[in-house]
Each structure stands twice: as structure tokens, then as C-alpha cells.
Image 1 (tube, rainbow, N blue to C red):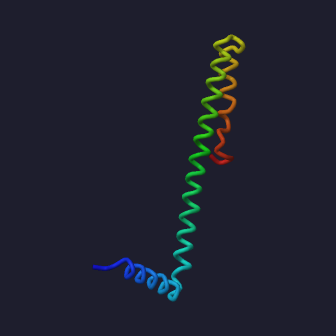
Image 2 (spheres, one colour):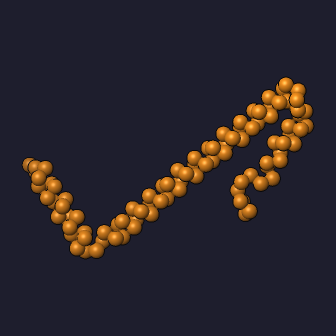
Image 3 (cartoon, rainbow, N blue to C red):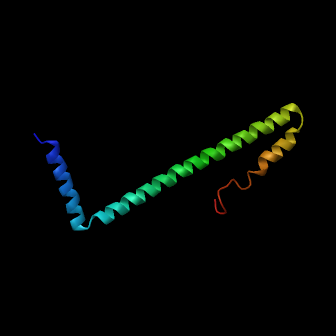
Length: 93
């Protein structure tokens, strides 16, 4: 049965061999690239969730103004459609 000391020694030897072969740089590059991609995906999802929440909050506020009579339904519809022209997708989307 292998002990923890033998496993630790084997692991350390494997790390040293990676440095000797020069393979650590590509491995670190791949890890860094994957990390950047994961951060970008999470940040994009958070941004989209925030935009959706703000849009729904605006819709409910406009509905409240219409319900209390301080805004006509036509004005509310015009306000809601005003943001639909450029929905934040950029110039090409």
C-alpha cells in the first residue's frame, strides 16, 4: 500500500519533470485562457440578468403610473417601445 509520503514524493517529481521539459508554460497558458473565458461568461450572464431585471422594473413602474392615472396607456406604450430600437446589442446586432 502506498503511503502519503510516497504519493507526495511522486507528485513533486512529476512537477519537477514538467519544469524540466518546458511544458509548464503551455499548461499555464491554457489554464489562464480558460480562466479568462470563464470570467467573461459569468460577467456576461450577470450583465444580462441585471439588464433584464432593470427592464422588468421599468415595465412595472410604467404599469403603476398607468394604473394610478398619471400616464395614459398610449404614453406607456410609447415609452416601452422607445428602448426597443437599440436593445443594447451594439451596432451590428
